[in-house]
Image 1 (cartoon, rainbow, N blue to C red):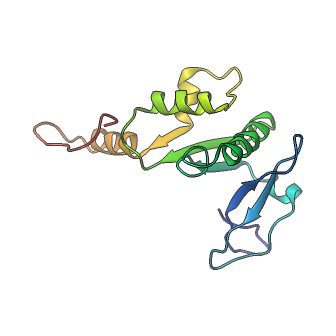
Image 2: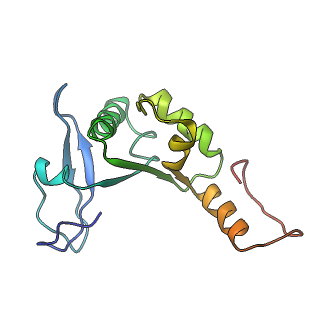
Amino acid sequence: RQGNSTTGGYFVASPVPAGPSKVAYTEAHIFPTCEKPSFEEFTNFETYIFDCDGVIWGISDEDSKTSVATVNYLLRLQKRVMFVTNNSNKTRAQFVQQLESKGVNFGNRSQEEKLSMMISASYTTAAFLQDSGLKRPFIITSDTGV
């Protein structure tokens, strides 16, 4: 994610346990780097993108719970939260179900709104093919997501 305008660098926020009512993060070492923003600076962003694999699932239960707490906190702040995965073995609806099973609270968002928050490789590929006007015949070798 891009740093603030004064630093111009990049940072990645990784959740770490911070107690039941706090959300915290650590800075990953990615170049070029910027100073680690304060919690206040971090929550000043409007859009947050979470890679599902290794951030929401595929990690320890404790880390997953911390990630979900961070997501839910941002959702309560009415921030735009997006989820991405390069995994193509499920539909976006199935990924949304998996997020909900991990504890992500989408509030009163409709199914359509939830789906718009989920970006997968399979969906992006299918949308590209449709937008490009590609018609049959062609062959897609993929899992069930496409």
